[in-house]
Amino acid sequence: MNDTHKVPTIKTACHAQNRLTDLEALSMGLEKCQKSLNDYLDSKRNAFPRFFFISDDELLSILGSSDPECVQEHMIKVHTHTFLRFNLSFIPSLMSCCSITLGKRDL
Image (cartoon, rainbow, N blue to C red):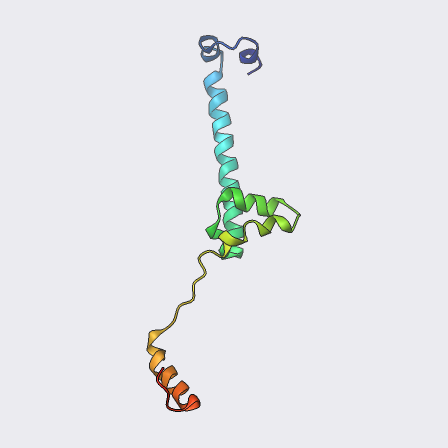
């Protein structure tokens, strides 16, 4: 790679000795690193499922910072998909309960 830096022409760079093997080795190392990083992030997401709602970059930002305020900027996304769900089958019993305690009122 130093030779390519000295003579930055594409034709010379492509025909350098062992260039293909060097690039394949670098690519394999990069894939191994990416797999390890994804496994690490998945372990953190499994420990705290709310992390599934943020990107890898944001999760790395949270995990890589010792500043508690760093988490603050990502809290909206972490809790975006929190919804309240009501079971509609309980509404008639809830209404009768309310009418007993409140007297006979239309709800």
